[in-house]
Length: 402
Image (cartoon, rainbow, N blue to C red; front, side):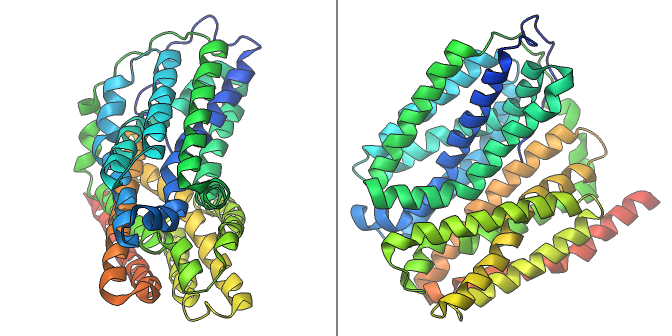
């Protein structure tokens, strides 16, 4: 889950106006559109690989490109742009998404499509790092919590439903039509925010170096590395789930999107469970979720042709997969002794490192051992993450002793 890397800005005199509830709603919808742009590509991989004449593993590197761009540039760009006036910042970000999605829709080859994925990846973490606290500012102190939750709902909804929506849209309109649709939605949201959102006071710039002392804490670093492994396990298989359903489970192409939608609906329950239990003991909850994830992913391939049992395996996988989003975010932020906002942003960056690495590993597995083995490799990586947890816990004990 995204968080900001700066302290809340000075509130403007307009910030508590009654009409600002609509601006908050528009921010939540914008969050959904923006984060959907990142995750929707997974549902489009089979169709665009066929259309562009490239392998599914080559198409999967578009996921890697986006994720690694967020990882490398996210914290730095957010810190550099955090003092910009929010209304102008969000409008520019949405215009970037509108233009880049249009470029992707018109792309004649994988290289132009890659550029269409690289540009929004630069802008996405800046939105992640500023939208929720801006929503709180717009709503005022009494309603700030609800406003932030609304933006988070847009982000979580995109994470859960972005892939199935992309698959269904691709079936109905083609992958190019899906990108054109995202381009149009981004442009509409830019115009609406320009018309509705008030101009807020410019936030003060906060030096990233002042917060970066958390990078000297071994326990914090251990939790960050653990997040990389967790997301690698998740996206080694999840990146190619649509292809697995189509070619291993032999689900008709027109029905794959609905299967992914069911996976996402189950994931909503996982998101709630992860958020509910993680505060008790983040590392133990991570361990349980990883074991459940490994079980669900590993069971998918042997049960692929028995669709009743496949539903059960996917439900187990989906619960653990989506639960790990809030679990990892809370776990990393709680491991930081200070600068929790920076800690959360770094976790988002490292999660994207895992997403990109997972796509790379999954593509390599498909090339060398075939699509049917990808679930076993992903489950093994999840078990590696589970085995790391006792060592990460010891880092906390050493820090306490010191």
